[in-house]
Amino acid sequence: MIKGRVDIITMGCSKNLVDSEKLMRQLEECGYEVTHDSETPEGEIAVINTCGFIGDAKEESINMILEFCQRKEEGELNKLYVMGCLSERYLDELKEEISQVDQFYGKFNWNGLLADLKEHYTATIANERVLTTPPHYAFLKISEGCNRRCAYCAIPIITGKHVSRPMEEILDEVRYLVSKGVKEFQIIAQELTYYGVDLYKKQSIAELVEKISDIEGVEWIRLHYAYPSNFPMDLLRVMRERENVCKYLDIALQHVSTKILKKMLRRVTKEETYALVEKMRAEVPGICLRTTLMVGFPGETDKDFEELVEFVKWAKFDRMGAFSYSEEDGTYAADNYRDNVSKKKKQERLDRLMEIQQRISTKLNYDKVGSAYKTIIDRMEGEYYIGRTEYDSPDVDTEVLIPAANGELEIGKFYNVKINDATEFDLMGEVCD
Image: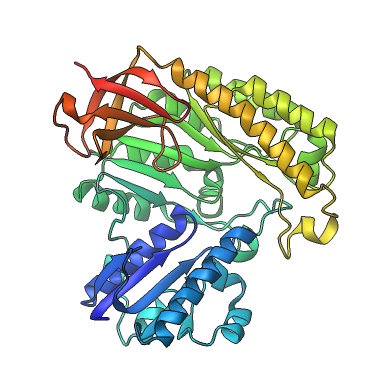
C-alpha cells in the first residue's frame, strides 16, 4: 500500500472517463499521486467510477466494487469510494448491501469526495484534466442527461434532463487541451443534436462545432451519439465545409420498423429513417456512418426483423453495433410491455444481423485498398505502428497497421498512408508522399 496514492478505476463509457480525468486533476492539485486503471493498484485510496446502464455493465461494476472491498478487508486499502451511474441509480441499496465502501457518490456530486478527504475543490481548474488517452486526442463532453425518454433506456432515470454546457466553457476547455498537445476531439454527449436547446432555445450543435473548428491546433473533430428525430441538417453543411470536421457521424437508429420505433418512443418512422440516411450521404459525400441497432424489443415479429435486415443490407453502414433488448427497471418498456421475444430468438436475430454487417464491413475495407488516407498514429504494437483515418474513432473502429520496419514514425503525428491490404477489422498500409 502506497501512502498518498489514489487508484481510479473507470467503468462504462467515455462520458464517465471524462469525469474520472477531471477528478484526477483535482486530486493532483491536492498533492496526491494518481493512477488510472492500474493493473497493479497499490494506492491507499481507491475510487471506482461505475456504470449502471444495462445488466452486464451493472454486474461488472458490482464485481469491481467487491474486489476492492476484499482488498480493504485484507489490509491492502485504507479507503474505498464509489461514484458514477450505478451509485446514482441505486445509492440506498448499495449503502445497505456493501458496508465496506466508505462513501458513495452519484453521477454529479463526486467533488464531495474531496471534502471527505479533507481537501477542497479548485474551481479555477474545473476545465482541466489528466488525460488517460494518448496525449494527441481527448473526449469532449458537451452536455449531461437526455430529454428523449426512449422506452428502453434508463439513462434519463440516472442522469436526468438534458443540460448543455455553456459554449464558452467548452471552447475554453478545447483551448486548454490544445495547449497540452491534443489535436483530435471526440465530441460526446448522450444526445449531441439536442445541444443548446436548454441554454439558447435552439439546436446549437452546428454553431458549436464551427467554433471549435476555428480554434488553431484543432485538426480533427469527430461526432458521437446523434439522434435521428429532428436532426439539425445544418450540421451536415459544417461537416462538408470544414476540413477539420471528420466526415464521421455516430447516430443510434435502433430499428427501422415503424411499429417498433413507435413502441420505442423514438418519434421517427421507417420512411423518415431511410430519407435521413440518403440525405446525409447526399449532403456529405463519403460520410462514414456508425449506428447501433436493437433486436428482440417487445413485440418484434419476424416481419419487423426482416425489415431491419433489409435496411442494413440497403444502408451498408460503415460501422454497426447491435445488441439484444434487456429489460431495465423503471423504464417505460419495463412498466408497459411484456418481454415476449425469447433469449434464443434474440440471439439468432443478433447473430444473423452481425453476420450481414460483417460481410458489408469486410467489403468496405477492401474497397479502400489502393487509396491513400490521412492517418494519425496512436501507438506502436509489436512490429506495427497503429493508426486511424478520419473514419475511425479510437477503441471501437478499424485501425491501420503500418510495418515499423518501413521506417520510424512519430506517435500523435499525421501521415499520408496508402492502403495495400485489408481484413474485416483492420487496414494494412504504408506511408506515402
